[in-house]
Length: 98
Image (cartoon, rainbow, N blue to C red):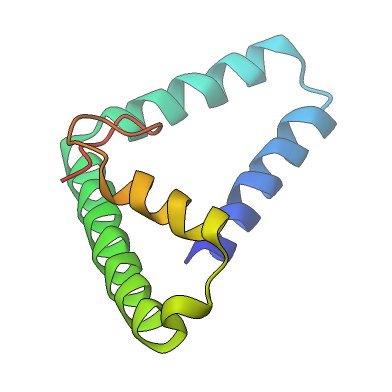
């Protein structure tokens, strides 16, 4: 999913940078993107995907921790403890970190 999103963003960016239609077309694209991103259905899907990603990351962390255990370098262990200690609120993408 991440690669598909990266591809779509790259295509959109390439189109915007490569278009000869000028500022008017750019503004149309920007307005359309804003409308799509503010659509409640799109926002719900992105929030759901973010929550599923967090759940998958938590499972992966648990599995790796069980298998690696004490063999993990202290710097990595410290970073994991720091991330586990994060409180709720919003992440860098503006979605809740619950």
